[in-house]
Length: 209
Image (cartoon, rainbow, N blue to C red; front, side, top):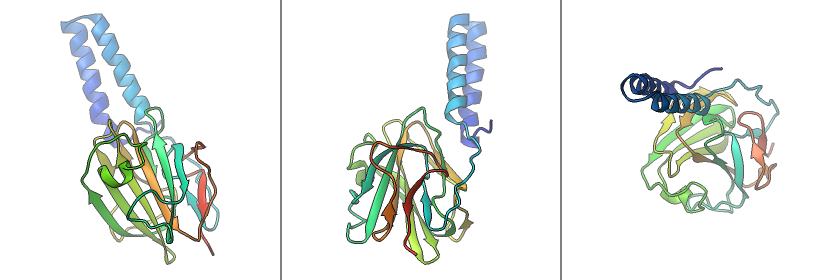
């Protein structure tokens, strides 16, 4: 299975420590660090996906559990103009992020902030995040990579002006986090809170024609 490039420094470091510990300290510590390296391989896994193809579909940008599906909880996206889908990623979910729609990247914005638990409603406003605006045939779709208590670094590999495909990989978040998607108010939300979604596969909203 493919491993996201951001994970190899962690995996390599854990393996090096495991070998050193086994020879210099104890085999028990070496084994524990080897298990940690195995978990890091699992955490940074990047499985291939069969991307859902449907006109007007907005795909889940991450694996995880739906926290919000409807009225925005974020101040910058007023409820008369937007709808919000928030996805919480546990440490067991795949953390590679994928584009929710095809289009052209209109803006990439970094917002420094706090490291509150990602499931808290105010985390969408107060936490550190990277925000990507996608122009999908004249309709804006926005996706936010939001850090949490453990996720202290966001990797965003897209740029303004880039043409992207729905389901295309564009980044990763390290060690638990949250993804928010904002769609125009006329869009129809197709998921419910508590539902588990799969990146590039689950349709979370349908855009108006």
